[in-house]
Length: 375
Image (tube, rainbow, N blue to C red; front, side):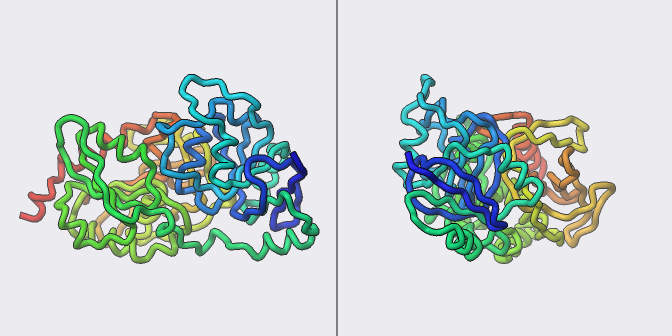
């Protein structure tokens, strides 16, 4: 177990030990506050091009298994932990965390003071980072390489993670609705959550056209989570505007929320260090209930959090707000069937406070049949 270095673009360096795959990797340094759910984090396509720092000190004790994977591979660029578990002790475990990281050539580092690193990112903001192990590069060369690596702002990444071909997740039990789900980095738990409610989900590539969506005659359109900067998603924004004009019910989460927000005329912006983890408090302004929610986003939408706002598609309002920093966490139109949330109601690793949002989507489709609109 050799020495490894974590190098930030501002020149701060953290020393640790080589762990998982050995080598060099770059990405955006972000921290996740979840004590559980590391497997869902690793396999979430939204983490593409990011180096994830786990704030919880003890990671890996429950191992890895096939049912909990959110996609077919690990997407993170690198993984940073303080104390990886030396043993795996869970009846559902099939493999160890380190075995999977090595098998998929994911560079990691252990023994890092992740608390100090998290505090640094919280104060200075998310930034470029590199992990270096098994190399004899000088510090100055490492810092130069980190600074010359790609930034998240302006990054178009949806095409990297989207499905190449459409596929169908059948409804469980009686089929009640058909939904066209635009895959910008969709998590496996999302179509499962809809299927459990009698929805047949057609998962579609990111470059799907409105005509291709119409050909499915869907009862609703879902816009998924995904990686990258929402300001780069102009084609998808225009697609969503076509769906809005057709008055087909829309539900978007995370990246999909940002894209819906842009389609309504709002600007996106980069948060200082984002929201990542499974313990973010959000208030539902419709019910006044506070939910503990799962997040993974570094961008947000600028919209008025009080009263209503006006769009070319009619009036709307902000439905959810983060109680830590007042970031907009949900949008809805008042006269058209469209809403979105910034967080993850499917939350396979928990919590499940926001699972009701899939029921809200079902109710929206039931109350706004597309056939009646187009008749």
